Amino acid sequence: MAQHQINGVKVITSFDYPPIPIRSMDWSAVTDDYDCDCDQDGFFSTHPVGHGATEEEAIADLMEQIEERA
Image 1: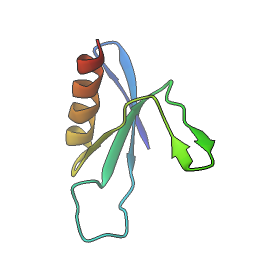
Image 2: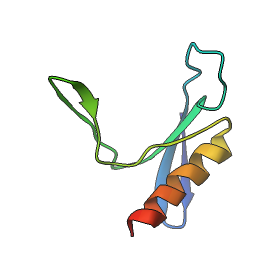
Image 3: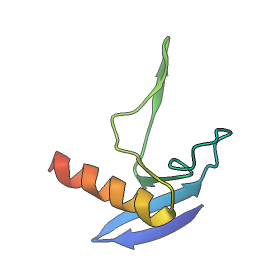
Image 4: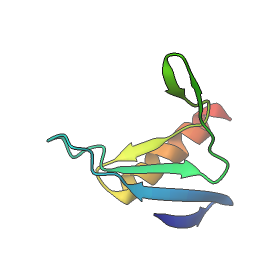
């Protein structure tokens, strides 16, 4: 887990390495105020989550989602 400051946004990245042969989702990135909840169907979040094969791709995906919401 690592923390980055990007355009005034605190971003937290994580190397997840899921047990699947596809490596395009190895990294995830969220903002420091990320929150999720659980209901009868499982976990959900209203906050964006970036994913990518590299840490940089995950951050770029997250920042793109944040920009789309603005």
